[in-house]
Image (cartoon, rainbow, N blue to C red; front, side, top):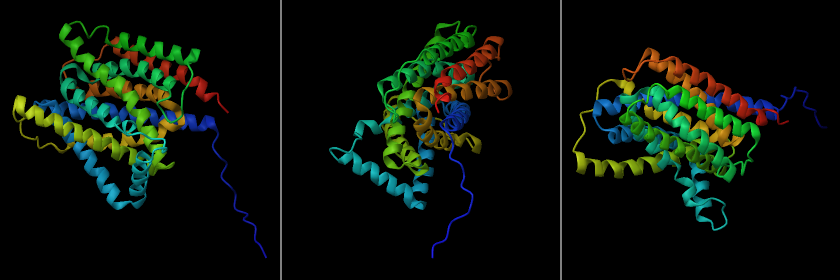
Length: 330
């Protein structure tokens, strides 16, 4: 005798719902990036050494992830699957597709070096300038797990609007050559961020199709980034000597935890929305959070001006415009 399960089934989410959820998650990821920028910028200022601050941030994140690996067997199995795939000649994942942590390490160094001077808002829009263009190119070349994504009129318009938003936001801030040079570093970090998100998405898909794969991608990211920063810090010690002593304020050490959350989340979300929409959603979250940070807990003496507010609003418009092709999918 067989029995029939009469329990109501939960309706599957539509592609549009997945896109909306993914875009909302991307927005939250961007807010965490802004918070991390403020924390790491202050830590770098206190230590008077951006590389040391980046190593503290990345290293603490790696410790948290290793604790998670020790406690959760499924994360260890996901990592083992990544290693096996890399070693297999036909595994579909190459070693160079696991080095996204290098871009993450560079971005954290720029946070620790520049935020205390130019402020979170200017830092963010400089990152946005690199990320907006780079995300579109990375998607087109198929670096992400979703494969090549075509240029569409709305996606191109969204990228252009995002760049206009950046120019508007910084129009009254980068009046001095020194400020422009400092802004170039996070702009390069933004270029690397798009590549990092695509690479981590591939690693996450290889590790596991669930959230454990995203965490495994985070482990790989932080392991590579921390290793690179250890080498950079050793060179830094030889050239500049020891940094200042570690500050006692506990809140300065949460940058690593922020990184763990947004790196793992981005590795999962990029499989749903693609690199370009993830990048623009992250941009919107960064800009809005940066605006509030510079209003209430500023990292420098820069004031929040009307162009910064207008640029933030325009960046939100860019997110909506660029996301329309994805949101229209059935």
